[in-house]
Amino acid sequence: MKILKHLAGMLMAMALLACTEAPEKFNNTDLTGLDYARDFALTDHNGKARTLADFKGKAVVIFFGYTQCPDVCPTTMAEMAGVMKLLGPDADKVQVLFVTLDPERDTQALLASYVPNFDQRFLGLYGDAAATAKVAKEFKVFYQKVEGKTPGSYTMDHTAGSYVYDPQGRVRLFLRHGQGPEPVAHDLKILLK
Image (cartoon, rainbow, N blue to C red; front, side, top):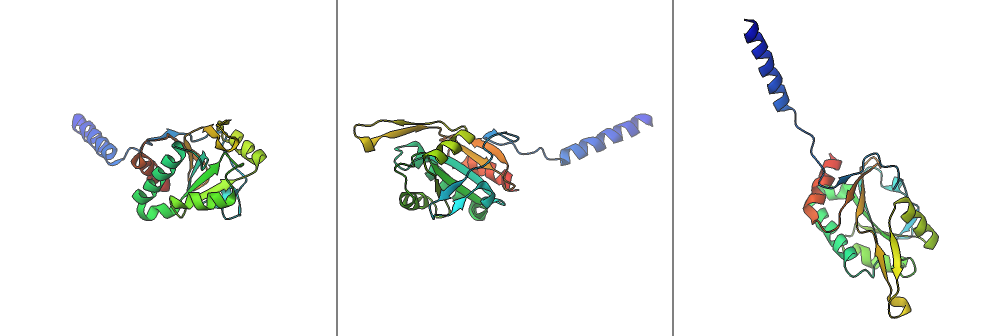
């Protein structure tokens, strides 16, 4: 009799465990609890001053790049446009921010014509050289001018990943460049639950 009760208890415990779903795992690097990349103070391509708090209630993806970038930047922005399509109606709960690391060439007007071409909801952010350096330092983003054949033909070496914040404004993920939209959409769906 004692064995039957013990067996019944074990079966009940196993049934309860089977009902409990394991938490979904992120495809990208989990940064929960990170002590940098806390905020920024920049201007969007519409001329409005912005900080992270402006986007509370949305998942936020921040990418650092420049409009003259020949490869990483347009690829990342096109990938994020694909992510938005995969998210369907949930895309309205995501804000993609493109922060320029080239304030010398990336004017408000240029950002306003470049960034929304990928998705009308995307915002380009800029600051002067000092504000750019400050935000890059806060986010531990590397960037460096690489001289070209003429003064205006330089390129910028820069960090290629993106940071992601949950709707409460906490940094949560670092997205690797070039993985395609599916893994990113998967991770954003987890954050939006």
